[in-house]
Amino acid sequence: MRNRRRWKRVLIGAFAGCAVLADAGAAAAQAAASTEQLAISTPPAGSAAWVQDHTFGRTLPDPATTSPAAAAEFFASLAPTELDRLIQDYPLVVGNFDGAPLGLRYRANKIALTAERDHARARAADPKLDSDTRQLAVSRANDVEHLLSPDRQVLAFDPRGRGLVSEVWGDLADAERISVLVPGSDADLGHFDQTVEPLRSPAGMARALYTEEQKQAPNTRTAVIAWTGYVTPSGLGPDAVTSRLADVGAPRLQRLLAGLKETTRPDAPPALLCHSYGSVVCGNAAPEIPRAAASPSDVSGVTDLMVFGSPGMGVQSTSELGTGVHVWATRNPSDWIGNVPYLEVGGLGHGADPTGSGFGAEQISSARAVGHNGYFTEGTDSLHNFAAISLGHYQDVVRPAPSS
Image (cartoon, rainbow, N blue to C red; front, top):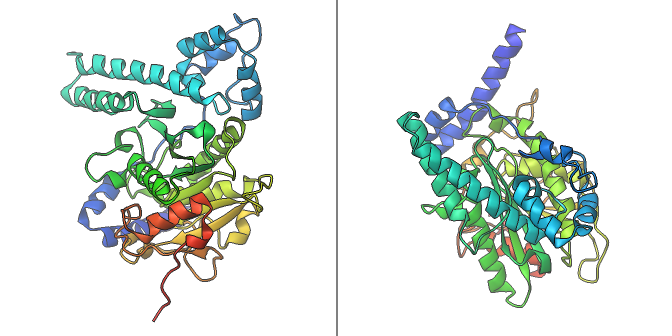
């Protein structure tokens, strides 16, 4: 047993060490200080009281067990006054309920965000708390305040832990094409929308994609979701080299997609863009993504799944991902993730390289993209390709240049 633990520590050190050597000394300090994260798999706060509330004359659907389809049916049966009461009494439940009407979720999450901001401000002003705690509260209040701008459409918000938040660009209910961005490590409320280096944040990447889609197809109604709906690894510690957090995140991604099926009507299944550790989540979720009903504009009914800066998808080839997805992959030469071992040993590592010749993914160019977070930079082949694939304009996809 002792030798097994020592071998596991050696493997973790090898995986993290490769990333550290590629990404410089600052990452080493981060890796050393990082700790395992507590995954969130339970329904949001207020769910227990919701289930026990019988004042509506009917049983409210259990957020832990109700399918998005059943949730959509339930919310459709309510009168406007009943809906208003639910979002006032249970904003976190309604705001996170996949299958609930989109506009209702946006309204509920504004109420939940306002409550969280006010709570954080009260803690920041509490003299009984130490200065570090008060400063953290100031940061939390500022992060939430930005999301309360009138133009923000927050699809989901959960204040637990580091904070989960998902946001929409475009008219999601009326979109012909929908894209879902699944981010990797260090994505949370505090890092969701960064002013400095915005393309390191889910919101910055989503904005860039939405802008590029509008540029390529100005007459197509599109929507982009930045989905930070799972607890991501923090830094380059143990969580980054195991699938533990992805195992919990994948069912949450599947529920999101099932909810979109009930509340949106795109011409094709939503496209998934999976960055870094997010590709582990997507790989975990892929086998349970069914083929959508064929439509005139999408005869295959297959979900486009783009992976970039990926440490692996938890499999050895696309044949293990089911028939519901078509995988596209890219990695630019300066991305440090390419120095991470592409293997899986004893639960550590994430399998084969999606950009490898034997993996089975369709390779796309990321020319002019620089580093692990440069894939959404304006003028890069990667950004162009992400938009083209999301739009279904496969003839416009740029392939990698032939090796010399």
